Length: 203
Image 1 (cartoon, helix red, strand yellow):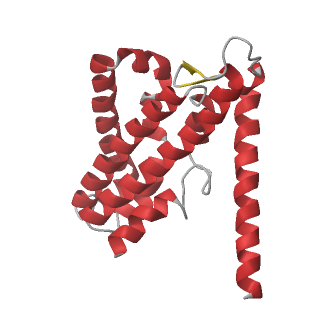
Image 2 (tube, rainbow, N blue to C red):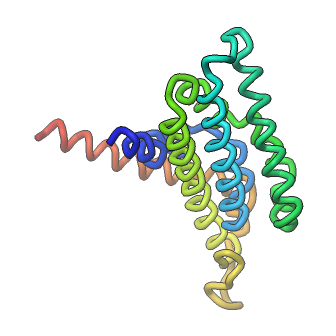
């Protein structure tokens, strides 16, 4: 039961992008297209699961004074593996994501989960936490990218949805479009939360 709660926590209650507002740099930068968003999300998920697992496994052996440096070394190792994998097998995605792949090393979601969860829990729960947080991050990126790609290009995953007559809102695939989309999604989430909390108080 606790494992399911840990997993769902990253998807809903503590979604890293839409609730905790962590990892905003890739959230805003790579969501011009759904394929980029999914690629970045799954890359971060793989690093989260592996780094959480190893950090939890070694948590009793890493001296507290150098724990952050130790976490970064572990995370950087897995990021390098993911980067090499993408470069070898998905070169188009590797070229699209560019600098944001190595920047996963300093993504505050990954380092934050290492410090807040993996360093204090067993390997099973830590891996589940990494999976939940990673999938929550991926879903958030995909949602933002879906809105931006449809409105900004009239496509989804590169597939044309509206034909040649569609006039895209080009601002949606530019930086202001990223902030606008994120702001609207957060407004909807806050509105739903406020109504839910109000209903609970009335009950």
